[in-house]
Length: 112
Image 1 (spheres, rainbow, N blue to C red):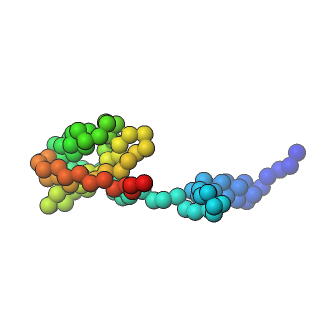
Image 2: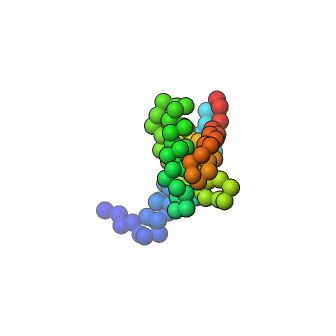
Image 3: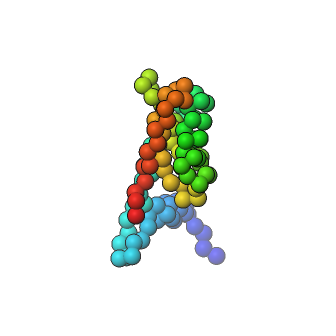
């Protein structure tokens, strides 16, 4: 029975994590996975439920449902609500007043 030292175990764990973040394209090249078009901003407590629900309703009306709110940002001019749709987690952004008026949707993914 072979005893594994902590340094060896760490290296194997690190190598596994590093490889998990890569993918192989059809040409056999290794590339970094694409980053998400949705920034990691979390949820801003200043964003009202009215703004979130306005954006969610507007996006649900344009898609087949499965809308998840994943982040929000507050500013004096407008708030930004980030959402994903469906099992493919298609990324969307919505600009809306904090009162929920005038939601404007924008698809953040790529076509193709």
